[in-house]
Image (tube, rainbow, N blue to C red; front, side, top):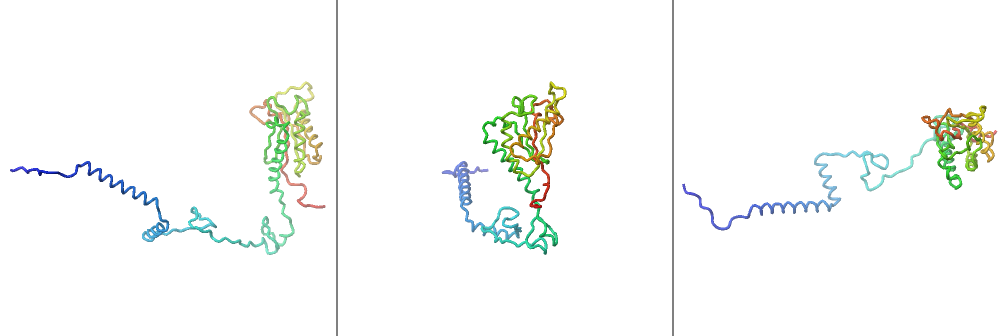
Length: 285
């Protein structure tokens, strides 16, 4: 059987050149696609998107809630027209709207709303801010900033003068505070005088204190320190009838129960009580 003779002369392109040409063609197509996606015609894109929705039967249900769609950011370039809606009065007997009353019949206009429960937290926050501002204006008591604790609790606004290691509010065994503490209380009095709430003052001692007089112990010392605090506040303008009680608790109510011997358990608590006023707002006898 005769063998086939190979064709003489030049053959085709090398295999590597064909592969390289295919690769370059793919890269050119890739760059063309990148450029085409980077330059978009917004109107044409919306037309294409609409055609695809019609072709596939896709329906977008946009639920509106006021000025913004619920499912995300608004898709419109304009804002929906917004108008005020008239709200009816609470009852047909009322001549003006009562936002804090509901279905009170003919008595809707005969009782004033008592806003004390709403305004009291704001008063406490304003009082705390005023106290901090007043104390910041006194550089001589700057060192006592770590001894002051202001906290709003369920009982009211609690201001505590707390002893620290090496920095006491009262001399050892004495019921009279240091002069810097007197200055601190004198700046506190004008702020507390503006509030209608009554004041409760409680003295506390730490466990383990020793007293030379067997008839004078933690109960007497804590009560005397609370009473001395009341006297200073009263000297600077707080009426005597504003004080609810003056109590001494000795070491029975430590601030840090896990360490009753800690110096921070020695403190005087001034509580601005959260309670209903004795007379309704605006009452005139």
